[in-house]
Length: 256
Image 1 (tube, helix red, strand yellow):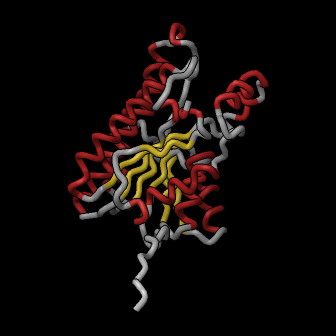
Image 2 (cartoon, helix red, strand yellow; image 1 turned 135 degrees about the horizontal axis):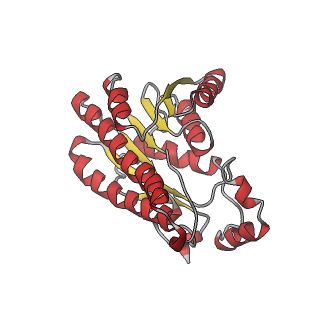
């Protein structure tokens, strides 16, 4: 008799409930689209109600299941209410974030608070609220935090952003250890520069674009589509033994 072959775990997410923060555009919208295409029921959350309503409608028109939820993740009382009003999610894409690039000597306290409060504090407490409901309902799920290559290296005029993304990497590893006994996995995705509506003005500066391309060994700026496979992978049973790590999607930037 021929040997029975192992079967590839499924990348499908049919019926699973997913939450994506900062989901109205760019990386967040790409994450929501990827999860919906794989069969997840996706809740898109952001401060801008019009933007996420349009995004959710586009997903529905493409055959996916999506709802919009207006939520400011910096408002921790609103975050608590949001999770109290819903059943547990199976997947969290902790994507909301910001950046204020400037040399460290020019950083103000307001800059510091804006970046660290959203990128670290809000990310922490969104994950905590999500996890509490998962544990209460016995959900075995996946947390995906949107990090950056700048959570693995430094960069000029990126002191605040690097501080926040390095912090996210440390939090992620500790989350993985705290949550392993509940079969809740926690990982980060660490992209290089991704071309979005927010970053396109920076790339209009030829010198800046050239400096970025000199670091990306594969020779091109990242696109949101470059992240969608990793998001789907970490959400699925194909990644069931992966926790506490980072998938670096940087075209070779951090390799040398």
